[in-house]
Amino acid sequence: MDIETIFEMIERAEKSSFNKIAIETKDVKLSLEKTFCSAPAPAAPVQAANTAPAQQAPAQKHEHDADDYVFAPISGVFYVAREPGAEPYVRPGSAVNKGDVLCIIEAMKTMNEITAPKAGVIESVLKKDAEAVVAKDALFRYAR
Image (tube, rainbow, N blue to C red; front, side):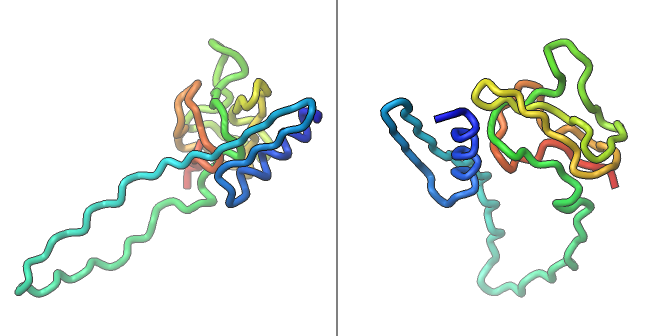
């Protein structure tokens, strides 16, 4: 089994509904398991039995939507530069063109360049250098 086949299997596993996949051949034993971290749900406000419900404020428009973010396509370790001590690919305020390298995610000893999906200005870098990330984590936010 070649490395490209393994990476393809990892990508398919990340997109699937399975939580654990194990494959074994005479040459290779591969086990993939997804772990999910979720934030605790906010507690609902408690209301006294005989009081009128509070009026709800009008829905607030979110300043950013999903198109304003760059998400991790794979799980791995997030790096802001090509090597330790090098200048980061981007910083808050950096102008980028579609296809510019934003960061590297190391997965299975392979360095994967993550590129800008569109042109714009990076408002913030949402992960720290050498931080573990999971597929679909937000990595960068574009300025509006």
